[in-house]
Image (cartoon, rainbow, N blue to C red; front, side, top):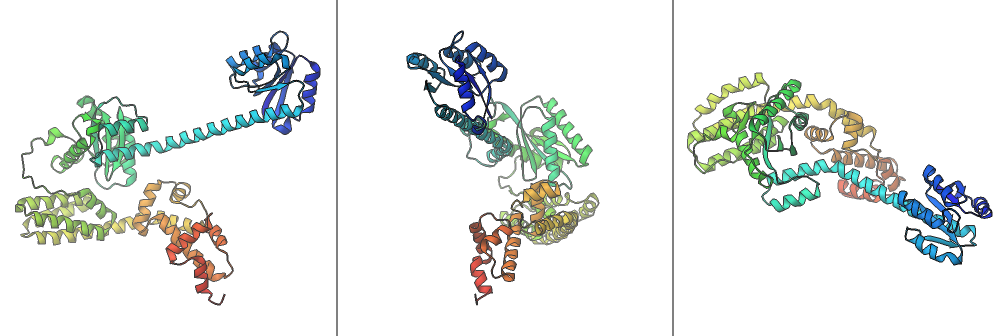
Length: 518
């Protein structure tokens, strides 16, 4: 309720207004009355009313002085001024302090009520506006970290951005940069790792590194931009990250460090760090690699194979043999078309083979090492491809079985939740992950797609449409809006659109096909 204070030196007016107006029914509370401005200001200091109804001409401190003094301390308090014709000049002065309601005596209670309602409406509008702005700020704060990550991904993977674009996004995302000199860290997890391990190393890095500007994940890498610092100090921080992560997860990490540069050069720094990371086979896993570590490399032929080994290894590790086979065919086709010197071609094959077997369990990796000499002894690229393909298929199917057993309990729980809550309008990947499984929605989505073969949202739609068709077949009188409501759709028209997209006909058409005699 809004608090109201009534001020007038005439007792009869105070009593009349106090008794005739039904304060509570208006959503107000009359907190008190005062005979003059001095008494009123003491009450204002103690209780801070929302609205003050005051006479202008009073002894001691008049209404105009009360408005002025109150406005200096409590500018949000609103006044309704009561006065006679002769005091209009006072009213004009009161308007300078935001007083918009001036009522001539004598005035009935309805005029006062109308003025209060207008003020309360203004209060409500202001509160709604402030609440809207607050909600928008909260939503922005929630979205901002993801937007920053996407910004970094865009800058390192595309050529179209420059310093002007960077300044623009800096303004948009409220990033306090002063054209710093930066370095880029690219972190690669070694061995058998899952998506949560990537998030863990990212969080550990953000806690232990100083002066981080942006960070994100790109494919199997964690990318971090920091302000340039002394190399010795940076290496100490990186070792702390590696040791802390290994302590909790027993997984090693290789970290590439770029040279220094400006933020708008981040794409070049990223490519430089990628080049460093590709040399972990020669320099050893679980190391820190800088450009100085690979500067010994001699000039080579400009014809260099460009191939994303991490993408291929991820397919193998995910158990997706059909896709892995296609990637492997592309790799060997490129080698065949390039016609490089034989030993160079074999070195590319061995590099990819080593990358592939490194994702296995250490005992399996030792067994696969024996095939390296066999690959080197083969005389044609086709023979190498056939052997490589056979080993890759064996590994991929092993991962498929391993992943299936590891994740089946999680996915079975998710499928059970879908069956049990198919009519829940809030049923979504986020809901199941957070409310039922207590895990990352992104991780659950990837597991679900890998095991079930389709996205969670698509699966839910199919189950709902199958249930809808079953309900139609069981009840020829069922209405479309009833189907929509029972299956979690608030909009029956949208439900019909989804039904037609899934089945090729509308619910009404399907009902006619099921019951042609209707």
